[in-house]
Length: 366
Image (tube, rainbow, N blue to C red; front, side, top):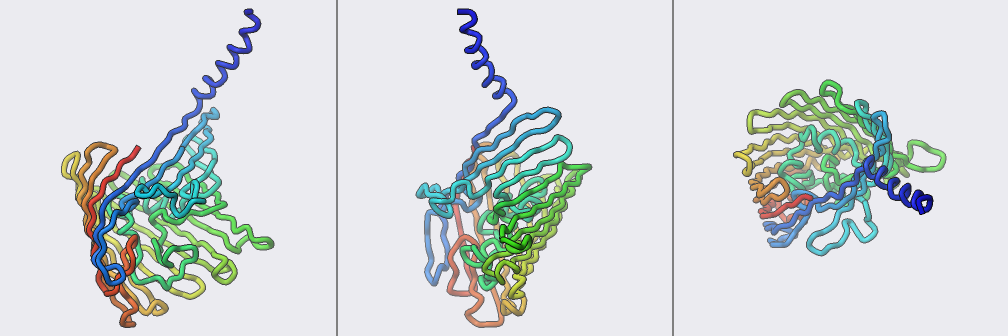
């Protein structure tokens, strides 16, 4: 009997040992609300809308301690619509937000493989820099759009949705990403996405670089990304993005300035964006955020331009649950009458040069 129990004892001890060295976390966030749009195709619209301040996401994130400071890491994340429960962008979009596995080393950095956010998002949008006001308060409505659908970004729902790719809506498949830890406040990264075109390493590929510097309340970020698409000169041309910005903490106020540049390398269509904004915390629960952005296209885009103001008031019931009121306004101009109607990201195009959105929403994180 004693010998018969030995295999059972070993089998019981083994998973306990593995569990002690591993960590798997279920995480997610849900965003719902009611939005009023002043003009969508010539009509006002009141609608239940979700994934506006933040996308509604669920996922799994994990690490395994390999010893000597090394860890295996992975993440799987999917986006869905709270209002109808469907996956975004469709039923075959399992883990479309991120799906990667890799290795990390304490004091050095992380190397990951799979579908991942590009470095415009990693180094300008996400923490630790948080230079784009979209992350902290503006949400989807604050991501760039305007009358620039003629940018013609392939595989994009409108041709200009989040055109400077800072908002995390563009991920890179078949990619390898290297991100360092912070060395005296300096953090760097590089990304390569394989085009997987026979006979050519550069056709359809993605190349990206990023840098952050943080010291005290100061933050600096810069990033570059170029993705080539089969629809643009058979994969030899693409969309080039670059951006840089700074942020500074002044007591309870965090202010930031961001510049981005987007170019279709085949057509020459170019849009430049300047954004300034900030968020102020009134005690532990209340926060007020606001920013202004100016977007300007070149002659290929008929000198179309847009100005947009975003304001948000947030109330945190807890660390996980926040209610918010948001107001957004955009007005536009350009060379061709009728060719530069307003178009706030996340809404339908207006039939005039102005568009206004009001929203009340609720976000929960787990």
